[in-house]
Image 1 (cartoon, rainbow over the protein chains, first blue to last red):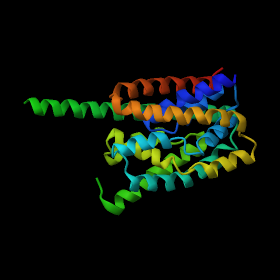
Image 2 (tube, rainbow over the protein chains, first blue to last red; image 1 turned 45 degrees about the vertical axis):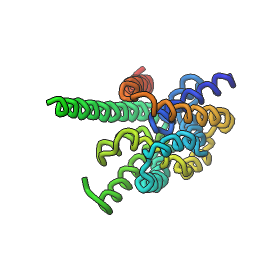
Image 3 (tube, each protein chain N blue to C red; image 1 turned 60 degrees about the vertical axis):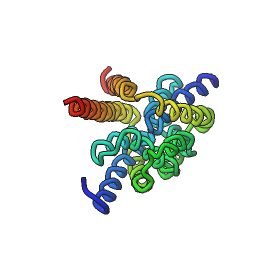
Image 4 (cartoon, rainbow over the protein chains, first blue to last red; image 1 turned 90 degrees about the vertical axis):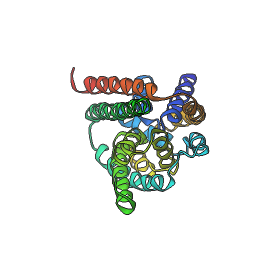
Length: 134
Length: 127
């Protein structure tokens, strides 16, 4: 069991570095299904895991390449600190079943946004190639 | 795109929305922040990812965590076991991201995310 948890952490970590995300979005369903946790418990534990700067190693790699906007990042951190507290006040009184369903719906929206962003970028790249050729 | 203060205020507002999702769903919020920075503020993918990682460095979820812990919704032991893996994996992923073109990877990830979300919503609301 402990080995599974350690490996799960490593897998999620690769996603953190690769996609620049916190990893909670993969951790929460993994804890619900693989470790059979309740939805609220999985979300609380995920917030705990995100507490230490687990993305620091990944951030260093991006920073070395000059791919970091500090100004925007700090603004984002402030917004998220406040927003997260508000969100937890909404989620805690909900029943676990509804929260799970809502979490699922959120994942679908996030997936669509991610996919759309990806599409737009490949379109832009294709257009650039065309202009270069023509 | 708006410049200066307007842009700053926009980013702050977008991040607050991501924060609400973060507290509601116990996630970092990066999954929403990365596409939003790109779509609304024209960040390149790598820059959006790097910037999202800064926002995750300070304990942005701490207020939400306290709220969950007060209700007894935190498994500290599992959390402690997951942390080292996530940290090491993060370095690995960061190095990989420079080497490969992550566009296809991202589309696969979006697909998995969508399926996972549909499954969760389905199992919660229809049985």
